[in-house]
Amino acid sequence: MNYWGKKDTSVSFCEDAYSKNMYIAEYYNTLSGSFYICVALPFLNTNINNIAVCCIFLGIGTICLHSTQRYYGQIMDETAMITLCYLILNKINEKKYQKKILPFILLIYIQNYKNFIIFLFIFTSCILCIVNESKNIKSSRKKFKRNLFLASMSIATFLWLLDQHFCKYVKEFYLHAFWHYFTSIGIASG
Image 1 (tube, rainbow, N blue to C red):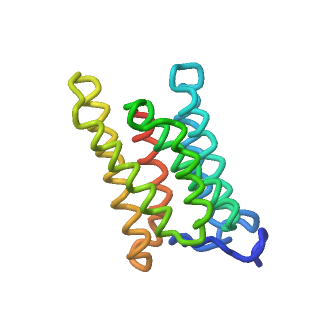
Image 2: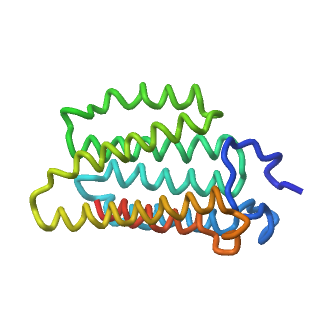
């Protein structure tokens, strides 16, 4: 029995649904969503508090997506992912990535949320723009942070791909939960 109703997300993950708890569809993926909230809290009273607040919403969306396997959780999670990436781009280069463009990007996503490839394209494009914008960093401290971001996101992406494409071989490792862990390290490094 599915506590939250029939699964209706456009993406699936390797973790078996409701195997650990009758109220939580993907137990480990749900718990690991709290990493986003934890890395955001120290930044709430800083000059990047908008990024921290978005990261908290990402944690809530991630928890909702993985605990329910419902479309509204997916929309919360993916909207927060896109918004967070765009806010990071805006922080790097305000002139090039103006905040007023974000609603149009989100509108395109929301109109196509059932088509996971649209989200994947938008999210990947934002990450690649972050990588491209960060290649001109000069200070050694910022280079270290950039390299930590790149390493964390690379490891996370590798684990996400394994989880998506080789589930029967890696199911027992809960690799999507590690995606949450490594992407939260990447976010915290910024």
